[in-house]
Image (cartoon, rainbow, N blue to C red):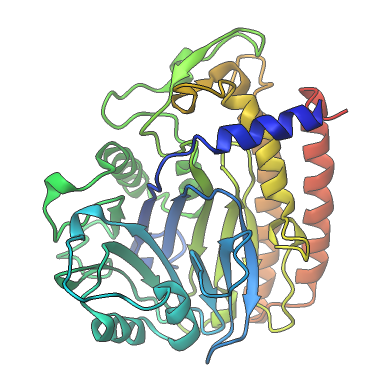
Length: 405
C-alpha cells in the first residue's frame, strides 16, 4: 500500500503548476508583542525542500533549499546570524526583456551571506539593479526594519511597513505582482484579495501574531468567489466530495510556509525565529527554528545525507490522500472529505492539534530564551522532542487512513 501511494505521490507532484507565492510583512508597531513579522507561503514546481546551515559567506545562515539542490547557490528563504531574514515572491508584471542583462546569483543567498542589516541589503539590490526578472523581496532585520523591495527591469522600489504613509495599518501584502508595474500583467489577484482580507481582520482585532499568520497558510476561503469550504464540510471521509480548488492561498504547488518573527530593540538577534512548515501546510506542521553556531536544526525539517527530509517525506505520502485524481485536471480538485469533515478525521483536523502542541511548547521555550537573552542548551532538547513527537503522531495519522501498513 505504501509503495503504491508513493508512486501516486510522484504522479501528483508532476501535475504541479508554476510557482505562485503569497506573502505579507508586518511592522512591530502593529503586532501583538511589538516584534516584526514576515509571512511566506511558498509555491514551486519543485515541492521538495529542507533546511540547511551554511557558513560559506561573511555571515552564516540557515535557509530552505530545494531538497536535491546541493550546489549551495540557491536559497528560497532564510535568516542569518545577524537576525536578517529574507524571502520573496515572483512579480510577473515587473519582468521585461533587458538587452544583454543577466542577473548573477541567487539574491536571497547573497543577501544572507553578505548583509547584516536591511540597509545593506537595499544597497546590494540597488548595486545589482536592474534585474532581468521581477521579484518582491521581503526583508527584516534585528533593528525592527521590515520592508518590500520591488525589483525588476526598471529598478528597485521600496515599500516600508514602518512608514504610516505606505502601510497605514502596519502591514503590506504581496502575491505575484508589483505595485510599481502594470497591474494587468501580474498574477495572484485572487490570493491577494484573500490575504489582504485576512491581514485586515487580524489588524482590526489586534491579532497580528505568529499563530494568526500561520493560520493564513490553511485558509479555505476564495478571494474572488468568497466561497468558504468549511461551509461545505462533508459528514465523514467516506463521502465522495470533490471540490474545485484553485487560487486559494494553499495550492497543490505549495511547498512550505514560514513566519519569521523578529526581535525588539536590544534583544539578541539570535532570538529571531522561523516558524516553518516544510511541505504543504495542509499536511504539515510548523516548527520553530533558531540560528545556532553549532549548526543544530530539528531533523524533521533538515536535509539528511541521503537528500531526504522527514516532513517532506510525510507530506508526499499524505498529499495524494487529498489530491486523489492523478490524471487530466486532477490538480484542480481536492477530496474535501479527506481534508475536513464533521467527524474531525480529515488530515487538516488531525495535524492541527499536533502543531498546537509544538507551537505551545516552542513559545514557552522562546520566552525562556528571551528572559536569558540567548538561545540556551534547551534548544537541542526541544528539537529532539519535536522530532520524535512528529514521527509518532504522523505514524498514527498515516495508520488511521491505511496509508502505511
